Image (cartoon, rainbow, N blue to C red; front, side, top):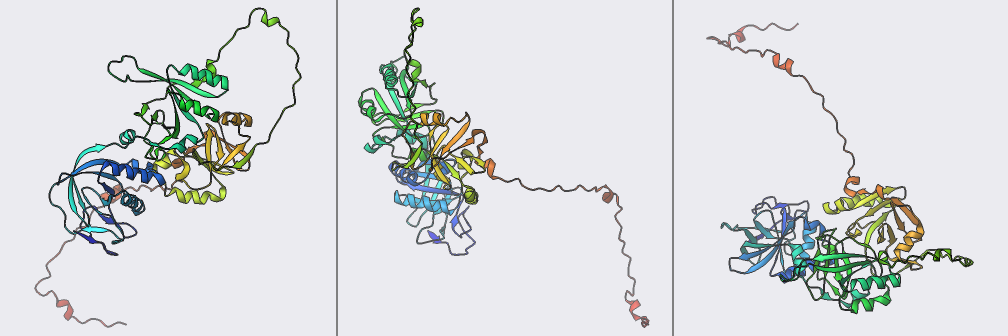
Length: 494
């Protein structure tokens, strides 16, 4: 049985349950109870649609629990970190058909809702030794953990869903080609003038009867021309993938049920390719990639070819176009940097107090006289301040919502600027290009903490105090008449 927590109540019966600054009953942990794995997938899909699991993953623990009635259910346990996070998780859990609890170790009570704005407390605790005890207004149940579920393993088991709109998304692509089609695709890219990188990836044999590993060509293309997309996506043996997060890609025409960009569970140096009608392919480490131009045919001149005369041709006049920025309606992708103006730095300092530990650790910042430049490889949306930029090249960022014209490739645009190596370039909405030294970027958590003041305390010698002789107090007997002195005449003053 649960009782509602009243305003300014100080005593609670549930172990590990306390009151936060708002007076809400909350423990060190939060717990979401879901009836099945399908509801777990729905919860992750709903939560990652508007936010990131980055700050929750460090403490997230997913387990399959079994009740005393024999029913199997799923629990998600995580660090509560205040009522703000718990409120948002409770709303998503309610939409996914689950219940939200809070506690510290074994006893968890229902989290607050509209009927109890300050939360609940257990009127009577279960005395039996169980792994988990949940107290709800509708039930009180004991559970025992059966097995743990890894979030990464669960995401790898989910099949992508059909999404025709993903085939029209611009940006870089991964192309996987069977070994027999790899050389032909390399020659096709060379003839078409498409800049791409290629590597030879290996996977274990498909069956125990195969001795040799499975080899496929892996291409990384910065921009696929629209005229090539029907050929690349319709040829058997070729599969085109859209990068959706760091270390993960989904086949064109499909989307993953969970927003992979909001689930940073993949290795940065590896790659996971989710196929629409087959199991995903996982590479713990990317193979060595090189430009396809290295496979171009080389022809040697004959002995007499070097003595041929060259015909003089006049050089035509050059055609130069000014770079302009125009708004675009395409969806934002790869938004990983922000330019914080000097007048917005106080807002950045206030937001820094609300950022999670993982965000502070992965984000980098560089301070200049034009403001601060913040970069985050997982997405800058978690730091909502400044002008956002999307990454189009390894060291070139373009203002989000704008496209440069003429529509040249990012490599050509980077070369036309002519910045020295090691400079990070930011192309603003007005066409202005600013460069920041790459060595000036430091982790955000290192740049935020100010130097703390401290004062030394002087040492005092205590040997002299220890050597001082302690006085001895002796008490004598007052005698037979202890108050005899009071009878004597007291001399008058003056």
